[in-house]
Image 1: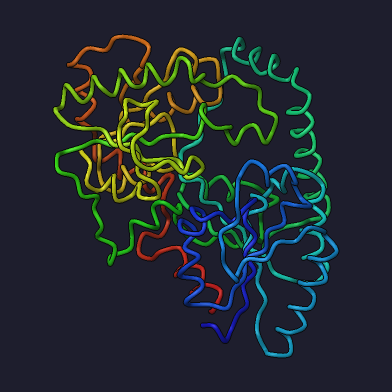
Image 2: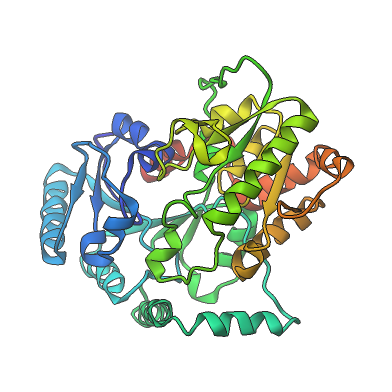
Length: 406
């Protein structure tokens, strides 16, 4: 395979260690001629401060200026022509028809089109979208209030402009690796997307569960459940990159309520709850702000596989719970309700699974808690095909390499 194609992978922002692992870069490294280009320093400079350090690998190249990247890619293209290789860009910069955060993304896509360099996108959200609010117009007033934050509004306007010019210039990926029938149908129904090949794919988390050689289970001396932690409110959330206003939970209220709720679950089910750390937090060992419970980093899948059930507010890592058929406890707080988008997403998912999300600021009966463990396996299977996978026979790196080497 290494002799046929040259792959340049463009991550959304930073190729961190956790992203390297979940994006199966170690398999690409073994099975293909590939390299990774970080472009955020000229596409979206603020991302560097938020997302942390680049994973240490000779395969990762960071470009500070647009002309430097263009010249490098053109040199790679000429080298591929001499060696009889096909140069392919695998991009997470946009999700067609969305071109990116600003017009610089359009320039990057236009450069690829001008020089006839094929690029493919990966649409692998890994979680169902929240349903749109249609009839309750009071909900729209919350968004209007949010729009007083000019930084956020400016970024959204730049996104609209980028998408408009992308459509105007007919900037399309050659193909889209897409996970889930729901998302596939959305693209198929877009007239402007005609001519783009759709390749069946998996969410990255679900793809990891297809590794037959990976049988690791977290070793614990007693039965346990898993809480999938987020970076916020303790650490700045990704939404701050977009100047999203601070409408999420506060540490002063969220963590004490969460600690009490986790203790309640431990008492009901006679087990311990282990914290699956968010990669950005880098937390391992005892976590003092969550009852001194054990936190484990970069092992969410193994934790989930051996758990009794999973607790989360919302996370793409819930794909592991779906794959391994674990009950899911969706939680929120009174503060969460102020965030229309997040609260909408939680309710959408709970409605799909015919369960009721739990407000950790309110008392919940033991019978209601126990009832959530009785989930509908058929709904889990439906969720997999709707939102997680369109090709459960192969892992994502295999799908990509087999398709590109046809």
